[in-house]
Length: 82
Image 1: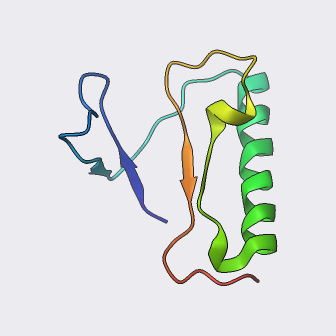
Image 2: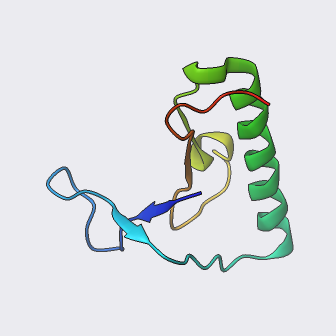
């Protein structure tokens, strides 16, 4: 697993994401359950679509909820289903 991200003041088309060593999630129990459900859905899609899995945005799955940041899941290159 690798983590990448932008801070709140960068992230336009001129800058690339930074490699992160650590990430902190500040969220309540309901939000954590929603994130966990999203991650399970992503794993299922990766298994179903094998090397054709592109990426998924948490914000697309939780359109009715407001988060200050987005979580994007991308399969590693060459990932194969279990």
